[in-house]
Image (cartoon, rainbow, N blue to C red):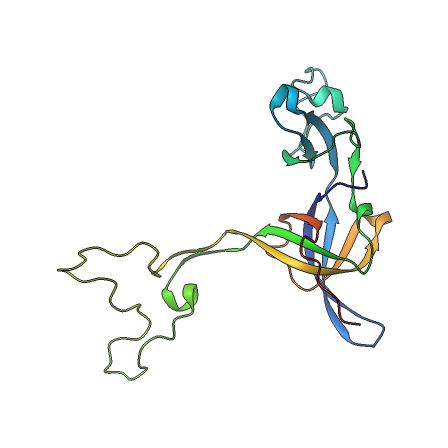
Length: 216
């Protein structure tokens, strides 16, 4: 399982630690989510090569009820959900294998994919960083976005115009985060910097696609 590109994790929270130069480093703690290879898809049967991972735990329906679907083959009782990832070669995988953080090494860079925190309905100043209007009492134009279109021409608002609306809750990728420490006995990974999403959210971790030269 050394060539697995993506691993599922859960964001625990943030802390801090000192490096070799006695500099204080912000740290995000990520817990490994139990991932088991539940299905293998190939080009002959499905049209493409992919590995399906079953992750998390959910309360079982009852031991008297027989297992349904392809979970029988992987030996799982229940799972929280499935994630599927395309691969080039299926020879390194078999149903029932467990995926963990052992594919990473301390000191290397990885990419993290997660969903940002939802902010609800926000105005243009918080959503897009507008500076706002004059702060004087008589301006009557403080936190609004201004004119969005004309009545005569073009007669409508252009697509993509920055306006108030729902903010956050979108997928974002943070590239080249340094792995500071691996604690495999506790299934923990310490990353330098911050990650998208709230504590307890599921995130995807992969080996960096654009490897950056780290400063010594």
